[in-house]
Length: 300
Image 1 (cartoon, one colour):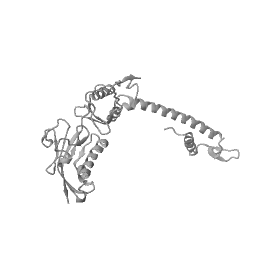
Image 2: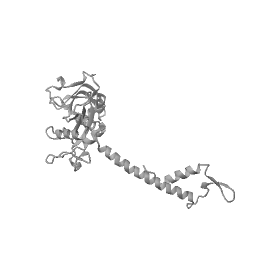
Image 3: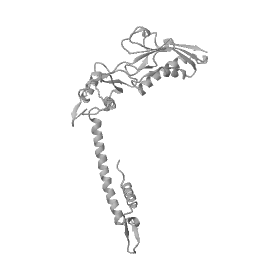
Image 4: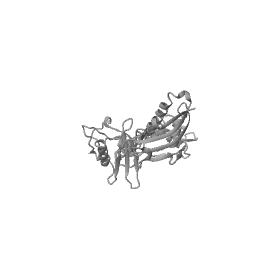
């Protein structure tokens, strides 16, 4: 960042003042330092001002050039996972007016940038063992998958065009993974009228907030227990069974399915973490296995 003229001049004067070689003998045969004359009209001080102005102008020009380079780099070919994530948030989609990437000044970009057409609200980028770049995305405030017939192909084509040649980008957008929780929730009896609603609301809010703050992050079994315990009126909780699964295929029995991942079974922790395939989760939707079906409330 360019320094001010005053700052540069002060540094020059400080350097001059510390130089013992800048001395002279005046007409009274007294040895003095050049800084003895402190007048702003002194020749030595005028020169410090002129030089300070020149240096300040050079530094300002360097700042302008650096900003131009940084802008060019930010728009250039992919260099990092964060760059890909940022670019996916800039993806534009319109069902009736196709958004076409064009090469403008050697940079692939939209000829018209329209933020209202940006539909992706969640994105996470990872690299698998085969060096494929997996880009998980979702849309909406309450996350949902991109339309597989229209929006997803458009997003895939977008990253293929703006990304590095020779890199395999795999855009993934799936419906939310499902979470089954069987638990014994102990509570103070005076909360009997609201305890079930409050606990289920707390769990749903936790899953939604986790999706926003840690998209494609893992869910912890210890966090599930803490969420329930922190509900007013709850005195204790025992997690009997916890199972996570991808949205598809949908089993008739999530507790006995090849696609399900058992996390807690018979109160024993099998795996402390679950990473949702879609990047986000909601409660189990199969009838008979929702939170309302599987959370047992016991008054004390």
